[in-house]
Length: 150
Image (cartoon, rainbow, N blue to C red; front, side, top):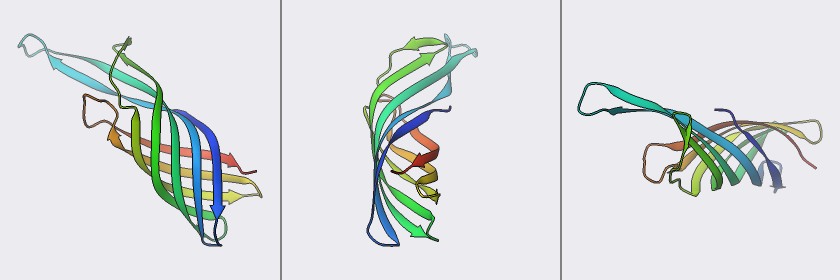
């Protein structure tokens, strides 16, 4: 599933090799999975497709290693606050219990070009379960970003 993200960045560069970056992002993400169930002790399966769309306010904090003046290798923790969700099962909206907080780890590579622009590729892995009553479902997101630094 494709989503989107926008937000703000504060970057503090302590020397020519190291920097810290804090962000405040509005992120839309989600995913889906198929479910299967037995019916009345028969060999017949019924099931459907469940899709969940999630909206978070995310706060990643990354340490950055600067190399070749234009590249930054970054990694750090992230906390996300669920602000909206929508889950459908068999194309009908259903009410499910979701965890409001998502703790995760993020890392990636940033390339700076021009005086103010950057291109970033990042992977974020959620450490918390998405659903309160189900396990094995965690956020796992690949982000591609284009940004402008003032």
